[in-house]
Image (cartoon, rainbow, N blue to C red; front, top):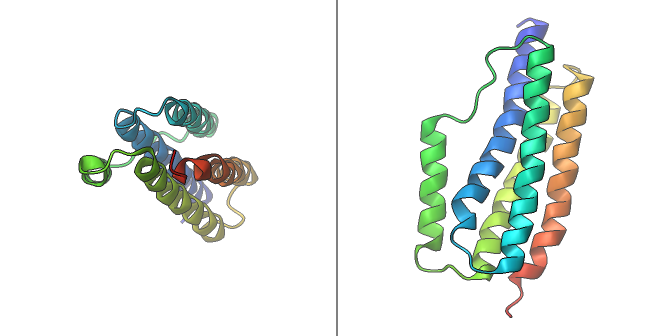
Length: 149
């Protein structure tokens, strides 16, 4: 595999991680009535969108044309999981828990992606590090929503 193919694979891994987070937030934000949680999720969505844009800008700069969002099967699975998870329980606690589980999955993906793509691109490492740090901070911001009001 040549350098550009490796960069494309790494870029797509990061991009799909951000796109999964954005879709999760879009799918779940309509299920909550807690204004503070809605505000938190909206802020998170904005930051994930900025990180996705960084990936798109990197693709453009490197002339990578095959940057890919998640496929429709992945999107459908995510949508189904969110709808099943909130069908009987739309409490702030449950929604925060679902978002925390997704955030932990995003962190795990970051760690694995960085290890799988060692030495491919310092610039992509930087974007991934920003994503990782952002998700770590999201955990601290979401944890208080687990407490019953």
